[in-house]
Structure formats: C-alpha cells, structure tokens
Image 1 (tube, rainbow, N blue to C red):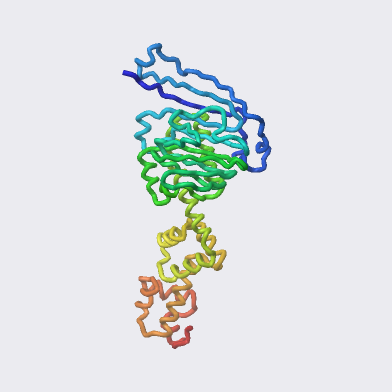
Image 2 (image 1 turned 30 degrees about the vertical axis):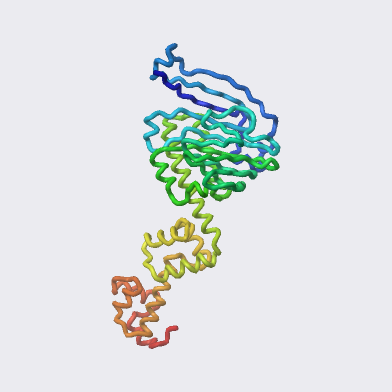
Length: 364
C-alpha cells in the first residue's frame, strides 16, 4: 500500500514590505527590482528510511522560494482539522506589475492549484482572492466573463472551473485565502455567495485586508495552535465580507431615503433595544453607525425621536378624540397608563387630562 507524503509548499519573501498596505505611497511601494528566485528543498523532521512504509511519519517536503513580489504557503491538513469545521490550508499574495506575464514566472503552486490561462483550473476548496490594485478579467462556467477592478473580491467555489488574470497595462495586487470545513461551508450558503455572481464589490478596505495579512502572518510564523487561529480567522473573514457588502448596500442609497424610512419606522414601533437593532439591520448597518447617522441628520437619537413622535401622537389623540387615556397610552406604545401620564406631564408640563381640556381640537 502506498501512502501519500503530506506536502508543504512555501514561497517566502526575505524583504517583505512592512507596510501592510503596499499599494499606498509608502517607502516600500517603489521596490520593483527584478524577481530573483532561489529554490531549495529540505525534509524536516528527519524520518525513517522506510518512509512510504511508515504512514505515521510526518515528513514535510518544503519548497522555499525567495521572491520580492510574492509569498505563499500550503500546509498539510490532518483529518482531525478537516473535521474541525473551519480550516485554512493556504494563503498568500502576489504583486504583478504591468506588462508581466501571468501567472508570473517563479515558484509554482501545487499541481492541483497551479494553472495557465489557456486551461483554467478547478479547486477542491473555497478561496477569496482580494484585488487591491489594478484591473483584470475573470471567467467561470456559471458567471461567464467579468471585469475585475481594485476593491473586488473574487469568490472561488469548490469544483467550479475558473480562470483569471490582470490586464497587461495595469497588472494587479492580489491577496488570497483558501478555506474549507463544515462550518464555513454553511456560511458560504448565504445569499451573498453564489457561483453565478462570484465578484463582490466591497471596495479597498483596511479591515478586510488586515485579515488576509493576519492569515499570512500565522502561516509564516506558526504560533501555538495556529490552525485554530486560522480556522477562526476564515469565519471572521467571511463575516467581514458580508458586513462590507451590507455597508456598500447602504452607501448606494440616498441619505434622505434612509432617514425617511427610519423616521417612519420609529414613529410606529416600540423603542425597545431589540427593535432598534432590527431597524439598523434592516438599513444594512450596525446600530452604533445608524444612531450616529440619525442624530447627525435629525438632531435626535433614534430613541429621542421615537419618544417625541409618540408624544405628538398622544397630544393629537387627546385633542381630537374622546378615547380614554389608557387606550391612547396603549396606541402610543406604552402599556402603563401611569408611566404614560408621568412622562407626558414631564415633557409637556401638563397631565393628559388637563391637556385635553385646555387644547380641544387645537392640535395640528
């Protein structure tokens, strides 16, 4: 019986730019010296000579390449980690300058990941490919041909043929993260992720890029329990991408429309925190972001605005109807008539009954 030797491929960069955002105008951005590749092979740790007959031997065949334009690493994943729910077998980045063939010359990826444009490829796992500079093209069987721009995230699905490359005139910078597992597969069934729409326009975001860089750092340094950290990071990255899409969804709407919808909702709903959280989610933003936006535009917090709307409704009902005070309180979202009466007097200076007699039909 033959046993496959776990393979770890690594392409490292001795002088990786310390600026985590190399597409910006930092001192690292201008380093465009010719690519120099130094390949070496080593087996570590030492193993029995009867390697193939000894499946317990964790031999790692490492490919090390020094390249100032790219870094990647593939690590073997044990059955234990494959069953953990979320795991990351590989990550990396590549900066492809204009007029350079793609994939660039240098260290090759493992056979089941390497590809040429003419043939494309099919992966066994998910990948996020984040483009932070330049432009290019992407093609898959479900999506057809699509243009790619800086700020686009390419989602690669298992067993879906695809290919992509930068435009010759621009090149591009790409960061990629490979992941799989039962838990992340469930996350990837969300409506945001479909093979028919594999390009997600999230923009160039520091928070998203930081997660790719963290994965690269974990694979480079392998701290204790780095596989646990990588699995958690994969789920976090998916969540961050979903959040980014929600924020982009809000940004595409007119500000006045968002505030108008919030006002209408607040005027008719309870101001309990869970309802306010629901409103913020409905508007595709966090509650803190919604509260800040709403107060900037109206001068009131959402809770204050809702309270004012209810008091105005109560005043109208008191002056224009003969409804009992307890029914008016209930229609204004307050179950306790005592609380309603106390609050109404606090805000208007008059009890509901006195207000009714002093403002007969006068409220507009």
